[in-house]
Length: 185
Image (cartoon, rainbow, N blue to C red; front, side):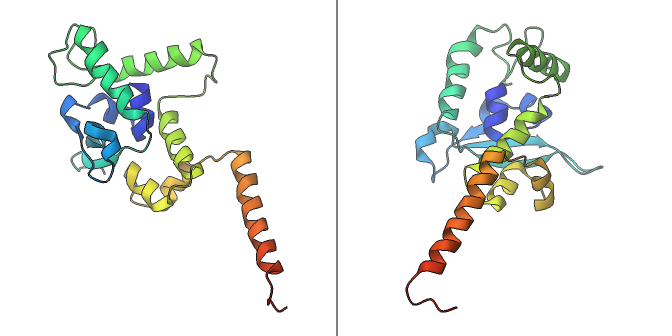
């Protein structure tokens, strides 16, 4: 569940409300098979509006295997596996938000991560990693359903290594351009 939330940059409720039928093919990403797109039916909406719907494209090569393993090997053994929900719980047809938070905190603490990390940190990481991997900022903005680039920028927390590599790339290009034959000062 947490890998899927990260793989698509999902919020808690978006993750919780996923159904088995929310995945589909992407003709431009055939390598992802049945998991090329994800329909988010319960996205964050403006006050007074119904939930925002959007499609998110699969970008990580490991995503389809992770989802397929859950659906075919783990989920069938669950008590409420006949539910249409992608994430049924032990007690009901769909996992609750509090359970989602408590499981995240338990895993976070078990591996010794910073206690300040929360479920939403997966979304921030997704955005940051897409930017660091060179995806177009507009693509990233559309992937996460932000109306404004400034909102996406708030989520981006690039590493100092990324900043150093970016600066080096600009400096090298500047030096290379200055050294080209025929350049006049």
